Image (cartoon, one colour):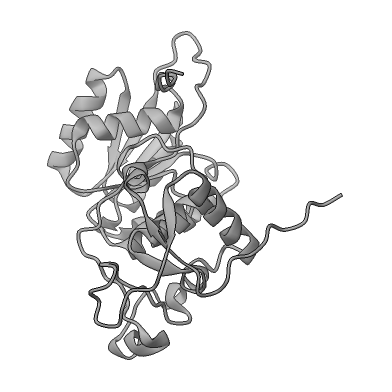
Length: 273
């Protein structure tokens, strides 16, 4: 028998992120689901239920409602009130999203008035999201292989150096044909670090096509990009990214994120009772 849907929040119920929630977006190794992460990204700012639902058309209202309840229960977000009209009341910014936002992936000045609030365009949005996989059983002799897709050859070399020191095999590609060649080589990459702006391709499009491919659809992908806006992070998560790290980044954070996604991090320490 199907379980009844949880009681829904009202359209104008509003939420804000807590310090714990902010840490969740900055510390790689989260165990939140993709739906939870999409909602949390939107609440990093100020959001009502209606605004969140407009921004995540890939999620049903029940899924949004469930994510909100999980985030509230985990103390990652708190219920709050809409800020005063002069913006001095709560210190939060409201988010308004025009219809068809994700189909056009753009917003013009006219849409800013839609809903009576301004679109949040927070530049320099900083996240280090990586979905933590349960610890995997490592077969003897297995050496994890990653594919670095980035048009910055100096950055490719830097990433290669750090991962070689960690015992990884590293391949690199910077345009479409090189990506295809690298994916056909054996062993198949265990994970792809994928930039967005490539010479002859867009990383989001590459990710979307991978998620539609019968062989590549489950390959872990971590976006590593200077596309540091909330809209870009949402797009990556909705297209199926397993992680999203904005540039500039600390190499040890990147290594930790990759290990988390591959399930080769030691489990987090147990909390003392």
